[in-house]
Image (cartoon, rainbow, N blue to C red; front, side, top):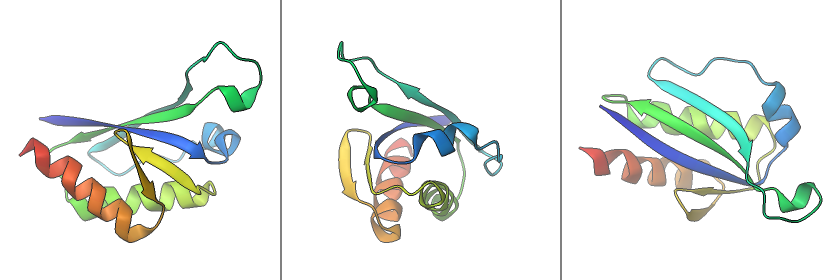
Length: 105
């Protein structure tokens, strides 16, 4: 069983993310970053996002810890997880990942 979670990158060093080739932990895959065109010009008009695929069962704290460290490494300040903007800190990432993963069970 798998769970896909979209992570919108509202304020992240996207270029560093694109160059990062470090593999995620077993059971987690990251697709992206990708952009969506809004028919405007300029980089600010292209929202970037990742798709995190989680193969269940996997420890929720492993997923949250990996995501927080991954985005911290790339200087994330604002993110949205499955359309819910959160305060970017470890506690909030853990809370939302626990909610999103446990919905599947």
